[in-house]
Length: 404
Image (cartoon, rainbow, N blue to C red):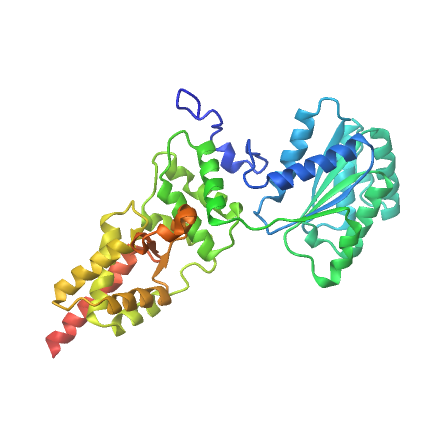
């Protein structure tokens, strides 16, 4: 923020929807960024090629690190030798198609007009020859970024890496999974290898907060960002890419408001997590119908809490305990701490509620001082759906009582 209170880094929807967008700062990847910058700077300056490998699940940040470093090399090193970057997506491409992709970009850089149809039927060795000639004519350092190399057969990848060494071309490969044992020998062809680790809850939260501040000119509800981070941790893998996908779906709503309601947020997330809400409605109804009246009343009060506060995503254990006490008073039951713990345990075991990781994240330094009653929970089903199910149970019981 500057002195006027405006976000000087604000760029708007481009920060979410442009696949090539690079944040001004890549959070929690400084070590990886500095290492790649140093290696590439020396490689380009001293005219020697490198084979570099980045491993990590899609959405973990491989592409943004590479693009940021290459951008910084251009902007921060005025006296560095000129280099040309070529991006090639290897997904569902043959060796011929990959060579053609590289060749077409090189010919454009050389301002050489060539009808691509004249070379489509050439054999591999003929394409190699044209490619070698084009790289020499360009007379510039070349950095080729091969994305999704897990789709390539090992022998094809080896050919490409050997080709890079032969023509002093630096090749940066990205792979979205860990190399299998059958292809582990490929690792020996790389001069530098880096496997990107997952993020902690706290790191992921601040990455989303940064991207949101770059996208929206107004403040967005912190609890919404925390809730999205919790859902990703519980239903996916802790990587930024999944959160960016969710934020794209949320954009039309957050553009006009600072948050969305609980029900709407869960509806959006259902489209992003295959394992989301593994409990089907029939199983939940079965569970509710078999539970004693105190538990059903308690869950009814819990659902009402979120229905009556649609913009709230969490409830503290302290407030949950209050709902339990109210439930006991409603039924004129004696309050029992052991029974309360049993209710919470049951709800967690069946997956109706989950504890947030944000308390541990925010109080890690003062963990011993943290009051257990300050722990936060969220429900994993839409509160409107849960309330409708509970109402159906009550209605069913009323009908049965009439016939009895």
